[in-house]
Image 1 (cartoon, rainbow, N blue to C red):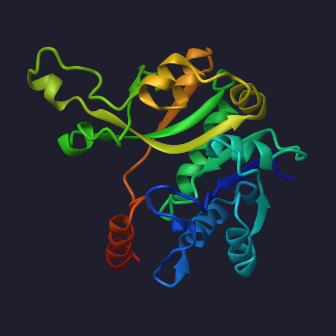
Image 2: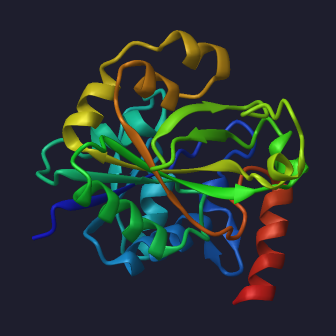
Length: 246
């Protein structure tokens, strides 16, 4: 039996695009496409954590196991923690339900990092970029990393600030954070019982709560893939992406 669980938070009541999880993307619900990518990683069981019966019913139709969690869960992390209760896996991977283009290889990299580095409490992913549209977009979170890709900070701002924009500085990439997390069970347990932290309140980024509490977050570098689904425009972009890449 695998010691890895992939838990997919799938909230129906999204503020920007309600019901986005069950929207049809090229003939399949968004959540089904995400689920199938998780299965392809072949690292352990895959469960879907949702607050809505309509999502659970949708999942049942394509053979996925869905766990109904409390509507009071404040985040996807709280939702996967609740869904993982009563299970024994020691590594819990949080793949957002609105990521239909998640690369199975990314999930495998996250698992490998957790298992190979005892110092790593939480594993996540980053993409190198020099695209100013991404860097200056507050919805695209930037990570500041050490040489061994331990996270020092995450921000919606352009960090680090390039004080002397010479040629070397201009070529240095920024790291765009991607919303996949792998947790050691003990780290997930600790995290969900921590109070919201000061930096988390300022940036509205829950990973800062982990850093402020002294948890070690390490990153794997991945390549860009298709869009996450947050808006109707994203859904259209995803359809266009599928036409070009699949």
